[in-house]
Amino acid sequence: MNNRNRGKNTGDDTLFGSEKQISKLKLAVEDMRYLLSREYPEKAASELVGNRYRLKTRQIQALRGASASDSQLYNRRLKHVETLDLKEKTIYLDGFNVLILLESLLSEAYLFEGLDGCFRDLSGVHGTYKRVNQTLRAVELVAAFHQKNQIQKLVWIFDKPVSNSGRIKQIILEFAEQHQLNWEGDLQYNPDKFLAESSELIISSDAWILDHCKEWFNLIGYLIREEKLPVNPIKMI
Image 1 (spheres, rainbow, N blue to C red):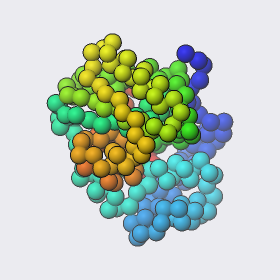
Image 2: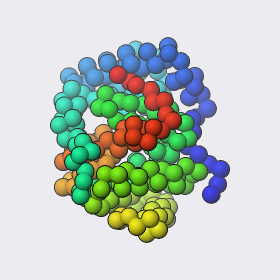
Image 3: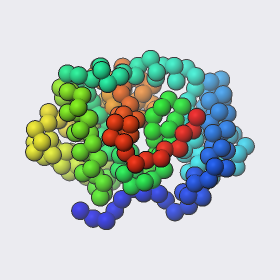
């Protein structure tokens, strides 16, 4: 294991660490919701709101992740399932989305709770996935969730074009074998489309997937509550 983690970027404390900045972002999210609900395109709306509140690039990124239109919020709420509905289910998990969010959370990076109740961060995979100090702990948290809720099977879906996706899939499956978990791993060229079109229950916080999938579960929100994770997410509501 190396010394990498997914903690804060230099400058994040300035952008997100004060009440003044958070109040500004909350107002910006309200404006975004208003514009998106009136069918303004997301890019145009975020530029307009970003200029209005003089937001920096990473603040606009957080704003876009936290915002949604009224119809999107209604649709997502309708399709969200509770823990009682998970027993004996097969669940498809958006591998990099979940892993990176948990790694960020465990590295004390800033997390943002959006209007839909989902948590999002500001990291991402840029062509290559690199395992970090928090990767194993992140996998252990998913395992605890699986066992507590008596889930039938968990299928981890990873982006095939991302470098090291095969390696992380192997690590996940080896962990599952050691702990006698019914897990599978699958590499997809277009995992977002695959998850959105699946008839199975989905775990992701990717907005596009949530808008198009059949049903979904908010795993990160669940883990923060259930496992009492030491996280202080920024509420954008």
